[in-house]
Amino acid sequence: MSDRYEPASDFLKAIIAEEVPLSGSWMADKNMKQLIAMVSDADRSNRDWATMLLAQEDADTPEVRAALLKATDDEDNVVRAEALLGIARRDPQLALPLAVAALSGDQACMAVFEAAEIIADPTLVAFLEPWIEPSEDPWLDELAMDAMKACEHARPTS
Image: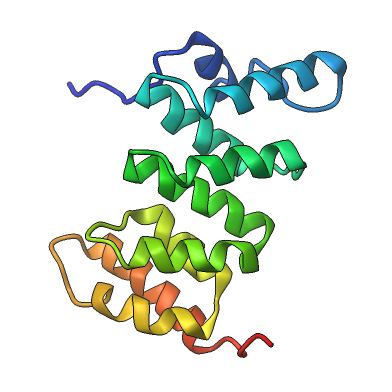
């Protein structure tokens, strides 16, 4: 039996279990502030989960964007990718240079390709080309190809 990957934080586990509200009341606002703070937590699992949870939220405030932008500089590539995806969901143009940087690296994970698909900008085509070669991960290959197709069929931004 394999261990399930969970954050170290009980607070984050409660968010995952949908036991902690993040909107709709003063207490939810307090919870959202704590979630935003956990994007900078010392524990990698907490940063990873907090960034992913924040990226998935509908909230689009200056504080949320600032936390996600800060997380794009995280030492961990998965945290950076989740942050990129969260920014792409809120502002694809803001995410575009971050996607270029992520796709220019040696590693790219699922969230990078999901973000590139959302951004859907023709300038990403050249940066996606190295990633569409078949690999040992057909699922990741499919995500890269979906991103490539979205970018190829997008109209250039002006």
